[in-house]
Each structure stands twice: as structure tokens, then as C-alpha cells.
Image (cartoon, rainbow, N blue to C red; front, top):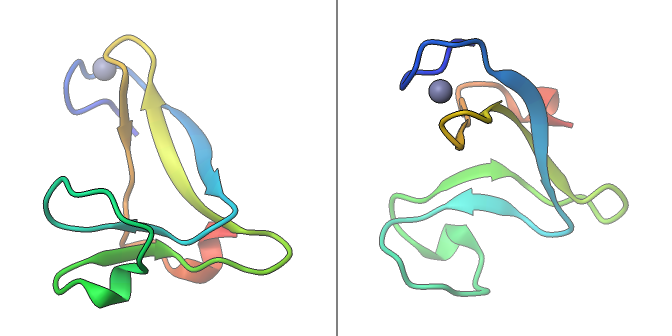
Length: 77
Ligand SMILES: [Zn+2]
């Protein structure tokens, strides 16, 4: 994937966590699951043994990370 900011090729990798990975509206930090918040996007549900992970592209020059959440959850593991 090319970086949407500078146009250089980005490096593929993973963002991982022992818990669910999700995006939710606003800036309030919480430990509650994303399903509790309307409009949230669950990027990867947590597995007891392997945690959660989602593919992500990194541009080290711009210090930006892009996540495409159209990718199916099965492909994120
Ligand atoms: Zn860039």
C-alpha cells in the first residue's frame, strides 16, 4: 500500500493485543468492550490463546499507520 500522505510504499505488519482491538467514537479511554458503544468498529476479537491482531501498514517517514478494516477477521489472525 502507498502512504496516503507522502506516496511512498508502506511496510506491512500487525498491531497486536492480548485483548480486543477496536475503534470507538470520541477520546474517552475505557476498558469496556467496543460492542457497548454505538458506531464502534471491532477490528479483531480477542482469542484466549492468541489475543487479537489486525494487519496494518506503517509509513516510518510520516509516522502514520493505516488499518483497512474491510479485511475479514479470519485474515487478521
Ligand atoms: Zn508517508
